[in-house]
Amino acid sequence: PVVVAGGAGDNAAAACGVGVVTPGSAFVSLGTSGVLFVSNARFSPNTEGAVHAFCHALPETWHQMGVILSASDSLEWLSRIAGRPPAELAGAVTAEGPSDVTFLPYLSGERTPHNDAGARGAFVGLSQSHGLADLTQAVMEGVAYAFADCQAALAHAGTDFAAALAVGGGARSETWLRILANVLNRPMQVAADSDVVA
Image 1: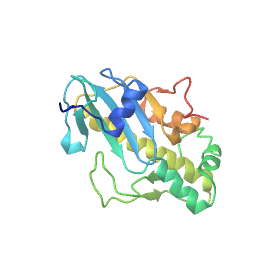
Image 2: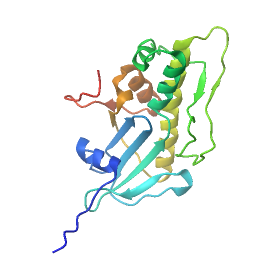
Image 3: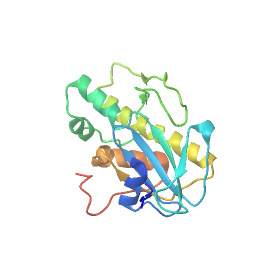
């Protein structure tokens, strides 16, 4: 006999692993690329906003994803230029208020919601008074606002979430998670036994 088995993409499999399987549950992955993943009870496309909508890895369940192409990779890029480890850069950011420098994290183009391989990054608002910590905070905020674009694209398809589990290397930074929670206006949760956050 031939065995027929259903599989899962990487993010759907990760969602099963972290328990994001009930409608409205969500995770944010601050990895090299970034993913805002929300489990749904129905198919909810928004192709104009470059939202990924698929069957989940479980029966009668769907999911949507907003995907950004340079999440923690944006901090890695700054790290290479500055010659400092990403954790050191992130650790120097206090984020006591919003940065007056803006960063567009389109270092490799962008997917959700722009779907533009030719999009490029930028720092805007630089002055002589700005230093490396300002640039780092701008990178963190720029990535957070890219996630907010994903959140808006998912909302346009009728999807919302009350909170999100934070995963990925960038989730090691409590400051970055605080920025992300403020920008998305949603709590960021971390698993109690997770080795993700240091």
